Image (cartoon, rainbow, N blue to C red):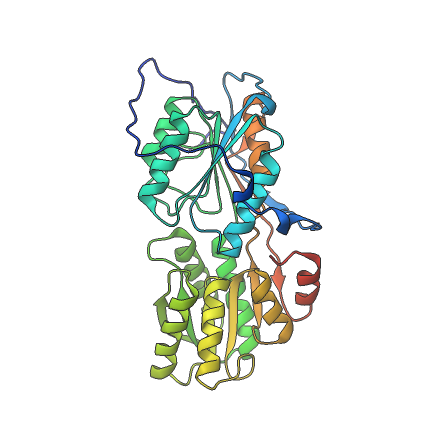
Length: 356
């Protein structure tokens, strides 16, 4: 049973780990990350709940942020609006407060993300923020960070291991509840009678797994809705369009599509239009994320609803780092409060910047 308070010992051992690296992270050029999307926005993250279990540094140094070098390992290309705003949020929160900011992007390569993190450790960063590609594959890098006394804050996707031991803490959404809320929105869209296709994220990804599980568990309360097709589209617009076209050709009676991300919802929307169906009338689409393009379609009635995933992790990640060095308690995980964008509030979300 977990203790209410854990002491995470990240102090370096007497031995030194030899880390073989293919490359190295460089100081972030000013032009590489566009933070203009944050300008004029008032939208922030709100923590819905935190774990009762906490971490505390057994030997806090009191090192101020102004003397730290902080590294951020991004998992995917910023062409994805979620990743773009996530990166911009971390940069905006961290860069002005610390001595140095290191940034790497794995571009969906797990091997590169592993090398990126080891590279930043080798350069002597004081703390790391990591958006993992998947739940596995980074454990050796986290072990190397622990050996050198470097706290790792994970954001968005959970990773294998124990918080307060293998990494410091996790900040993210409740992916299971996102699936539950998506199912309820689908029930509302179809009037409780639906023949639904599910377009999933990536195989083995914990986000996709929990969004599927929550959706199907909630549909047990709506016996008039059946999932007739499930296909993976790897979070990609083009792949989602292709698999949706295949599904519609095989099952033209589909009247609902649930996508695990807005990028895939846009692909499904194109496929529906190309097939000669009317989105919002013949076929009801429910998605997860909260990107500006998708929420605009909610306002226009083309997408029924979007469950938000808020990517503005920068301030929370920085606070966790600061609290660790100050010897303050840190929750093992912090779960964010996510909105539901419907026709009633979608235009307001677009105008206010809540939709990204």
